[in-house]
Image (cartoon, rainbow, N blue to C red; front, side):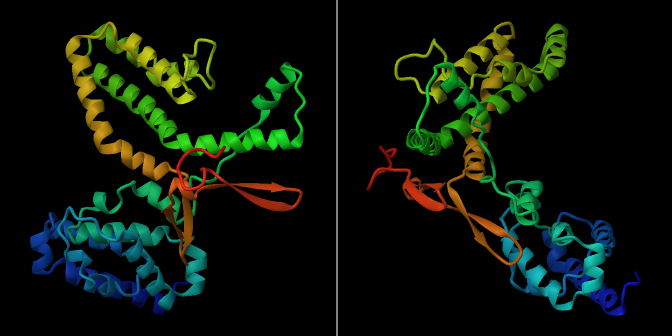
Length: 334
């Protein structure tokens, strides 16, 4: 398909506007890029579908924020999408572009050209932003199989009524909501702790230790041992979260036992810093205590309080909502 002049002209105007601004003295003082590097980014932007009004984003003043300050990425991308739709050639859009991926790619290069740190503009990573924004994905999409539940019932020759079955699954969902942050913390610990230990051993361990950790990936070993329910050795008052954490800590002690004290001490410091800087962000990003606020070009995940959470039940063509907490409290519903 031949690209029409209106589309081509708009693309050229967008690149020219950005080139003029990026090469201004203000931006040269702010950006870490040299003029040749800025010009190289401009060549990349020649491939960027026209944004319609790059000056509109610049005029908001967001480009002049300090380099380490987070810009309002979602707002800016929405703005670019709206401006693009005002001038884009629908035939060209339908043929060459599927969704806002091109806009996001161009916006990243735009931030780079004007000296804004793009790491702070995408705190959850580029891919997560794209998944949430362009693919409209979220952590609420999941399924839980009931095979294990029914297998245990058959093993003990139990025949539950519909009411008892719904009650069991509702209470399981309620307790899952109340323990979700702790479940996420377990998942984070298991992945980060094993990855950090393996990286340290491969970098600083003895040849024998390096070969052992290279041959046997630590997290894979844990996956084969990880419990999915409490065993007969569960301690009094120990829920599944604590039981699984204790099993993982025992597994780590075995892995750490033969390592030099210097590596063990450095590993403790590495995971301590990671926990301090990363864990809360991981829990916030992966939480299912949220709803999706719809926008024209994507949805934004909006957190909700645990006290507001409810479990939805569809039964006999009717929809029911069961509060996850007791009235006026954050205790699990009875």
